[in-house]
Image (cartoon, rainbow, N blue to C red):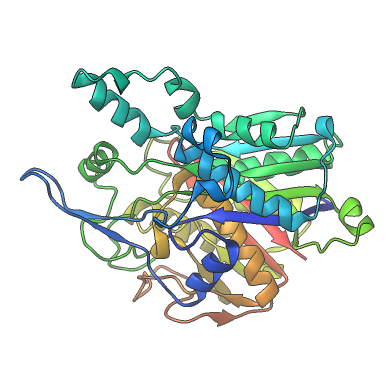
Length: 402
């Protein structure tokens, strides 16, 4: 892949509501967790990671629009506005700009709240705009309306790989000449007791009040997170032509299916490794040229084991390969997790500094690379791989670099 530039980034996350806040929190090894109290005896206590209460949608949208939209859209428009401002694009060519966003289930909390009110017989339990508030494609639609865009408008739902697939597919559209610009990323709003309890019963989430422990030998599950992240992609020649700083280039993208199990990855890591290999081939880059990996690294026993096997297979025994995950800091934001990894990767490339993996104390003995823990690690900062793997065997990998 050639000449696809990232020129803007924006984020609303549990660690902060701007790229600067988010990056600083990662470097400082901060953790954003809310302890869940037990309202009933059968409630499983634990933690999840929320967007800060100080986030104000009125900073990004007018009051009438805020009233008829949900947090899913609020976060996306805020992240997109940050990214567009940083990109320096004054006006996108309407039919030459794509919007490609990842989302899995739409706004689950909003839907469940409406159902609860409906069950209690309250009139507002069946709001007339419910569908237009909770369905997964609504955030992308509002981005298109905000910037008056008439190009491809796509919402990708590949579970936890959604936003990485969104960026990869958007970059492909630019590479093929179908569009010149793209607003791409993802959003997730799943923090609801029903979803949490379901994941507890599936033994997917950690049952402690500690952060997740990606790649730790004592890891026990992930922490639920939420938020949105967006990047602006464009032809590099356009950015250079107006003197805009190119933050990074999307150099390669790979996406394949496990076809193994709905919730568990192929334990060999074969297909995760294949996604990484395809991304490297697309980038015309050898594994030895990759300095670091922003891993999927959720902290689950089986998921991390498969990713460890995949990284080992692709890169070999490389103690100079530094690997980190942002999910120890702020949980697993599902569809938004890939783009949050990309934003961390871009910042790391510029700082030549990789943030630590919060919560991780002792790396799994099967690891054949250097897991960054406790403090940031200096690295060469020329090329980074970003991974995102999801339910259904969705595997995506992206190579970003200068």
